[in-house]
Length: 223
Image (cartoon, rainbow, N blue to C red; front, side, top):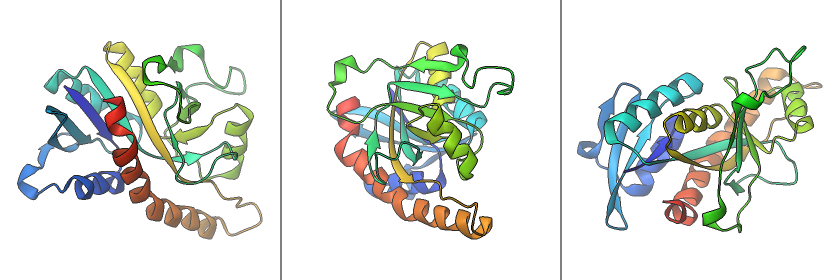
């Protein structure tokens, strides 16, 4: 079976709305809940994990074991880092990295052991790709944003790199499909709270649009 991993409440709510899921079709598990939909005559399991790496890894390991998953698709919103792109642009990264696993003052910003290369050759090339960076904190501070740009990160989130890492450990294919919901805002000459709230409000507005775009235009291609 193929699993579709979804982190946040707002992303999962968008999935429930998109697929018209009724209350009796929703089932709980230790990290959140899941539902099953038949697509192309085959059952797919969609599940929420909660945010941050520990929940993403725990939820996916649980579902890999419960449903004997052969592929995981990580679907959700992300922060834009490469400013050549815009809100609502969708990416299928060919590299996933965890960038909060080193003492960056004395080690490389990203260690080779925390890089997962994703082979997309069988899916064509007519989509945005690049590197997704994952850490246990969201990119809301301008200095973090500049550091990721400097290290050629394209988009950033708080789960996907760790999920790709655990899928590799389980010999399960992992595809990441992420849409930009927001870009960090420069808070240096502004009130930090107001600046961050502005970014959060943009995220909340754009997340359902991102999810609908992923489900409508991308998901079936990568199943």
